Length: 311
Image 1 (cartoon, rainbow, N blue to C red):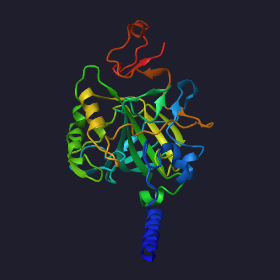
Image 2 (cartoon, rainbow, N blue to C red; image 1 turned 30 degrees about the vertical axis):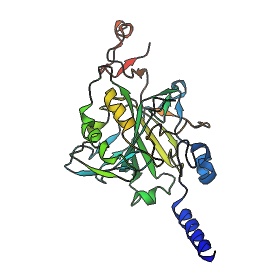
Image 3 (cartoon, helix red, strand yellow; image 1 turned 135 degrees about the vertical axis):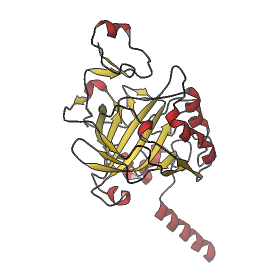
Image 4 (spheres, rainbow, N blue to C red; image 1 turned 60 degrees about the vertical axis):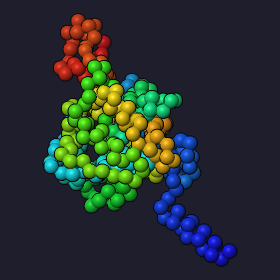
């Protein structure tokens, strides 16, 4: 009995050090219970949120995001199935400068997707309750601090660049994601990792870095710390149906089930203001041509494949 008591004590000690396991649904500590073990998950500035366009405030001081070091550099990137998502480690040479001059250092990139029978789409953020098929997060930390681990403990420590994905109507594969999708078979099980070579993060992002939404929120997974400045790019990326299905069916989670619907439900806005760097037009998600009604008004904006003027 004494030996059993000692083992139990050691187990509880290790559990306390490493924190509780969590899941999105149907597992130990699913998202409705996160706040029981991670109190901040029940806070007032949680993410993700539903962006309501009629409540978004235009801010002309929000200039283009400046990305340095995102292009191919001949580096190798580690990619892992961590049981909750697929995550790519990023080098400290990747920097993002925001409108106020703050420089953030890239830490990692990961994805959220759907695929389950109850919900085919899997973005975390929604726009007017529209959920996108996939959402990617490029996580950064404030360069004021010497590392991510230090920065994550400070109120101004983190920033996340967000990319939305839609299905291409012509079903053309996105060649910029070929390397990424080709390696998913190598990380089927949690804990497995692989190496990406000749990776070009810049080409995996939208061309337009001028138009984005921004607000103050939190990490979308435990411990849900409320120190994240979010930048949600308005222009979506297109993927083929085959590519989307690959992400939705290739990986297993910690419960040995297909890793799907790994997104957190929308959280209350609680009076927060969402700002936008653009106005007067809305993105035409997934539509390959501009509506005739827009063309006839002669208020056509350039790059019409991705956005059109509101009527």
